[in-house]
Length: 222
Image 1: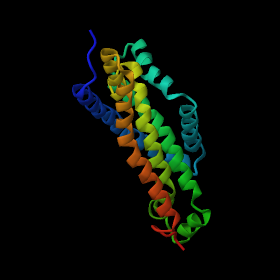
Image 2: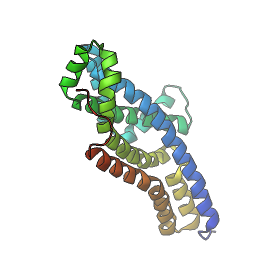
Image 3: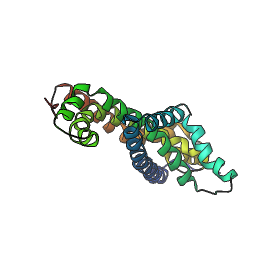
């Protein structure tokens, strides 16, 4: 016997949204750490670390997130490593976010004019000092808008975790829809919850893009 879609189901979806945000937070933290390492290695003047980092970025970017999820969950299970859905989804999202954030941040570093490196060297700064004190502050201005924009996509991509059994908001919507036979109001509610999370991020990305385009913020070394 089916149930009528009601407030208790909405509360269930809101509770599942917390699990979506948990997965997003774990993937973001792990991806940020991995992305920072990849961006740093890809920016090194040394050839082999540079090539290895770029290779990792290109390989991961060339694999759909869904396939990464299946590898992290079913693939590890096939090797005898049983992982819970949250751990498998977090691992896949960390790899996914790390590759894309690494490329965004590497591109932001590369966008800083080479003259800034030369000016830093003329002041006697070593490579890591020039990166930290001169290049990174300027690269941040370029990196912030696409980084915030990517976070919107990362929130949406958490929905794929439903395919490995993680009960985030999309999976919760499927369960409620099966129980109520009311897919339209259920998934309109799911869509509204995603919108509540993603719209502020989208607006923030746009505002940052406009603000940085006006020339406010850090000035280059002259």
